[in-house]
Image: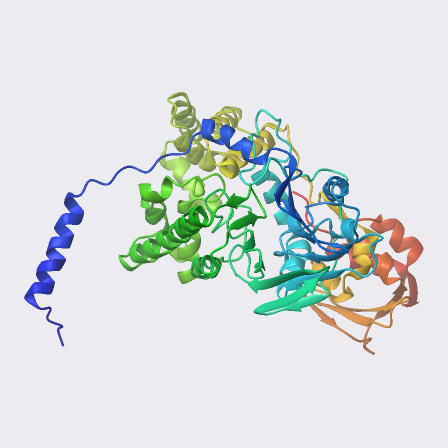
Length: 574
């Protein structure tokens, strides 16, 4: 049955439509490399006194660490990315007070907020560690199962090996204080909660509220008597990373906007983010929180609107722009997240990878497509010349895209490689978003042979490894199993540990892993080793060959067969 609108309503709709077409919409401002350079003032290195007993360390790494001073102790909110950066912050905090650390609060599971916790707790006795209940699961998935991919992608995104001239800042901090030799010491939470938690430590009354956004385990800290809000990563001075190009699970913009609404409802007088500088003044905070929330909802709502109009992710990303009244906000400059990236992530989060075009259901394999495109262009030499011509004409993006095809077919083509490097460097130099800037410049360095990325850059301390459950290390083995090398094998290996009663049987069955938390009778070989040694070997703190030879004892089976088994789990090198 058709729904008939009253004439007055139809007229109003037509009027609104016409008015919308005729109204002049001001253009949104565009971030520039010069603006990014000016943004560096946001990260002046200092410990800033926000209010009596509230200090924030800015500029010591990508994230802030916040000190709450109480009657007989302190609370530390977020603990930096590494042991080394945490040591610098703790030394600065000790210039303010020598009161012991009574509690640590993690605002969420990202490494830059939890990596230095052991430093703040060292020598402090029993320290309560507060976190939302999903934190451990999310932390371990990133640090164990996706460790290699996240390491390399993060290094590209943060420009880890770029010079100071190339890397202006990282958008929400001056740099990431992670380098070869860095160590991490994350403490496991002792006080977890689902929706909210209220407590008093060292005379400091605080409320922790679950506020999903950049992570599902995000929380904010509210000091109700003082109307001071510690917002975590749900609010910082840059467009939010609704999607991060280093890779992430889906970040629900609706939940993020709702979390900001929870913060708005508190009417804070001071807000201290875990990145960038504090904001003071109830009215200004209300205005910027509202615009931040509206920026998120605008991108989400308009993406879904265009999805319903049949637009593809590429089409949406090309057309979605913040309106000027939102893009004008200093808290929504695209120095970290980007509306176009966010739109793509929303599409995938809501509908998955398929864009609705039947040609993409079962596309040609990338190498096959490249061969056909090169042939269509007249062969490798002809397309290579088109790449060079495009780059010389300043068509950097087109040169970059064309070079994808040629380098798949002829990876040693020097002219195309050089043109691609030039295109990447030109795009990076002109880019105001540091994540994109760094990715362009880092991949240019990799292609030129100037940069080689490691599979791992930070090393967990032995103490941190001791606190981690054994079963998660077997999960790490599973994602490194070479399916081809084990395609014809069925092997069961029993692991007995000399310093814990835990027992496991690891079964490899034709390229698939199964881990059973007991010692099975059908284990073809059984080995004994210290759990701590086992963890340190898998975490690459120990040489695997030497450790297997000297630290593992065979109960049944041969050491040579065990070595062959463990070689099935060596991560693939690029």
